[in-house]
Length: 161
Image 1 (spheres, rainbow, N blue to C red):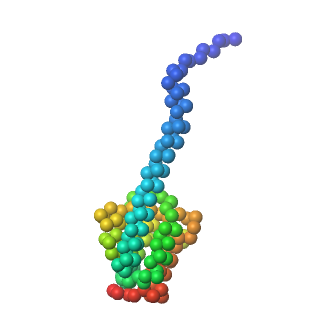
Image 2: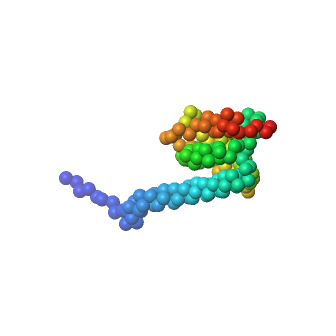
C-alpha cells in the first residue's frame, strides 16, 4: 500500500479559518449598530418636527394638487402612523410618482409613497436638506390609505389651496 503524503498547511491558515465567523459576526454587529443609529436619529428629528408643528399649529399636507391644513387632533394619529410603520430597509432613491407630502413648518418634510397594499415608503427631509428614505415593514398593516384618510376634509382638516 502506498503511503499518502500530507501537505503541511501553515498555522496562519487555520487561524484565519477559525476567525472568519467571528469577523463576519462583528461586521454584522457594526452594520446593525450604524443602521439603528440612523433610525434613532430620524426618530428624534421627526419627533422634534412634530413638536414644532404642534406648538405652532403648522402641519400642512399636499396631495394630488390640494394643500390641506391639518387639524390639531390629527397630529398624534399621523405621528403614530409614521412610527408604527417601522423600517425594513433603507433605500437610495425615491420612487417615481408624486408623494403625499407633510410640511411641519420647521423646514422639515415627510414624503409618503404607496408601496403595495400593506407597505409604504417614507422620505424624511431634515431642515438642513439631508434626507433618509426607508421602506416600511410588510409585517403589519402600514397603509397609504391611512395617510390619505388623516389628511382629508372628512377628518376636520381645512383645504387651503
